[in-house]
Length: 267
Ligand SMILES: NC(=O)c1ccc[n+]([C@@H]2O[C@H](COP(=O)([O-])OP(=O)(O)OC[C@H]3O[C@@H](n4cnc5c(N)ncnc54)[C@H](O)[C@@H]3O)[C@@H](O)[C@H]2O)c1
View 1 (cartoon, rainbow, N blue to C red):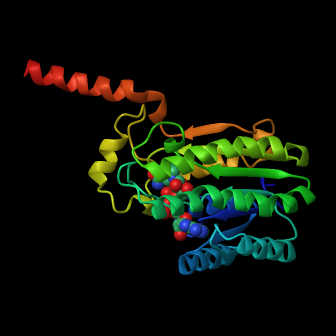
View 2 (cartoon, helix red, strand yellow):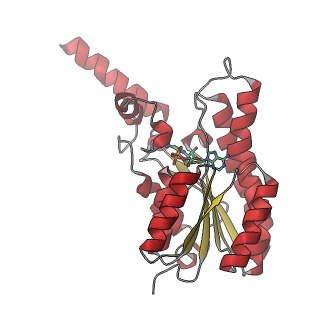
View 3 (cartoon, rainbow, N blue to C red):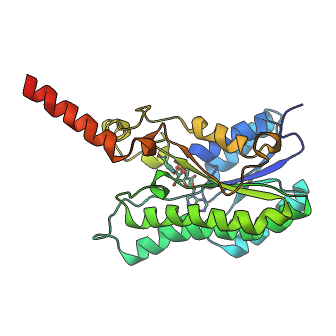
């Protein structure tokens, strides 16, 4: 028996990147998956591929900022799949502008998708999860939710998501729902498509494990947090999946810089 047999998991932003990797791991553990995204064609293709391989998967089009769309999706999940055990609030957008350059409309948009989207998702999904006896919610924040980070709106959204995860953990515990946040470091997904590989690798260099990671390396932790026997006492927690990027802190960047300067002065 697989560890999520009979369970239903809804993953937002699952048409590609980390969400897609999560959908693949959830079905491998026996869960039915709801692939929820604004991007229709790749999401439908993924659902069709998983169904053809013998899994249970459906695609639903949703903009996570829209509560009416959430209500429609949850009604459909209940009608077609009968229950909901796991919600992964993974959908997100990036904006790399700092405080000085951040326009208000772009700030509002990134906070809307990355912070309000998960809140709207929890609001819509928690009652159905509670009716089935509870479950697990995983909110995908970022290392930008653990440290200062050079992006004003994005950082605000990810710190906010880290905080509201703890609020939800307190509020939903009486219904048997655990709520945790994960904080990926540098992950190779379409979100980094417009950043050169050299810049990505340089950015990752300060981590204890100095590399960009594959989306599956995040997905395994998300699945772990969704399997009751592996994480039954874990709620309100924040888990960095960053190769020690945050652990390294400013010290590591400075140590590398000093070592380089000493090498140059020896040469
Ligand atoms: N890639 C990284 O290095 C990295 C690092 C830390 C955190 N994250 C976070 O991980 C999560 C997944 O990102 P990814 O790296 O897989 O990027 P990605 O761009 O590949 O995936 C994001 C997905 O979210 C969907 N999406 C965007 N806006 C949406 C909306 N309003 N409604 C529904 N779906 C929407 C997109 O269509 C896309 O499929 C995001 O929350 C991101 O902020 C990424």
